[in-house]
Length: 460
Image 1 (cartoon, one colour):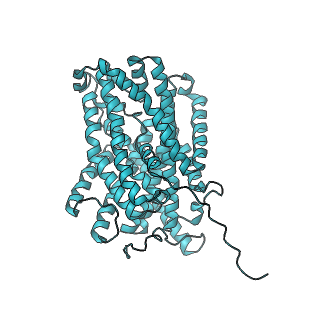
Image 2 (tube, helix red, strand yellow):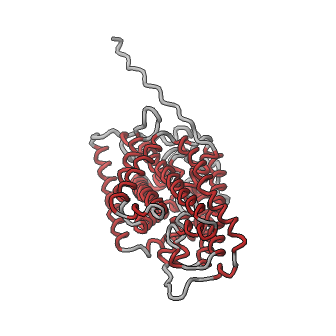
Image 3 (spheres, one colour):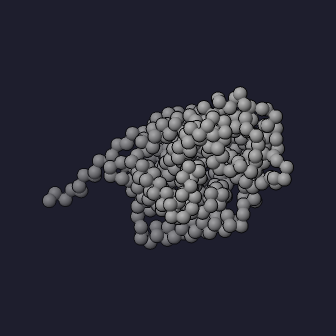
């Protein structure tokens, strides 16, 4: 016995994400295809749906993507928006941001198997209700979680393949629809006797075009994030907007309007009307593949968020445990999966509304963190910097913030109740963790988010 401490086990080396997989991970964090855009037509008619998907990216997507690019390059570690809020306002707000965004993320995860089944049940009616539906939701959730466990690089390249296969039928449908397009159909504001549902309309736009910042939680897993993030976000914004607009314009212009039919999954029915059953089945298969990509991207974001929260001492070290074989955050994956299963039996609209409200609260804090860091810590090294002075940045953030307030105001009582309980639980969790830390009941880490940034400004 020499009394020397045993040598530390070597840390598994993992392949960093390159630009192309990062683009498609962002794409699946946000969209995954035009699946789910149909209720916008049901709620407000073709013209307002087209205008919504044309204008909303400039109101929301571009500002959120710009903020994500700047702060992800300034703080290129895991955790993303949790780190930003903690650096701006302290541990309490970092923890609360983590609560809102994490719960929003896992609620969102629960929506993807449900969305997939809403397409597939048209071909397999047994999945519409009862135990076959529950088995399908549970089985698909567990299988997809295991795929995430096998590694982020695998998830990234899988996203590329899934995007190509799931978008191909929409490209074909749009091309086939061109000779059938009648421009006057685009001008319809809706059918007589069908009341506009503004809550559904805005929730649909919001749900389909948000979550640009989710990829920030895994910045520490990206190769050269200072260069990769701005380029990946730019390409993903353009790609996502086109993937929504082109099929929407093609379908609304080529088939007679029956507004009541524009529920989630209607694109498959439209494909049959435009080209035949073969394309309908392809879109239904594409919906399942898209849901896989959406699920994997969102689950990656949630699990790596846990790692970032461990790094800044908000969560105990146990939450940062990585798999011995794949080096993936298995505790984060497990917790995310279990919570997602718990809420996956809510209705699709309730899932979307609950996720939107929690996300809105988190985004208001994110905008505030961005502006505060620009004002109080202007000397932080920002490899990418939004090319605006502070007054213009305030205006840039106020416009989407007004929309966030609208989303909060139009929420239902059930959504308020669910979100309120989750927020209170998150606040209680913060004080519980502080108690555990002060009593040394659980092991916590010191902040190490910026160990690789010796040029970073101190005191933030």
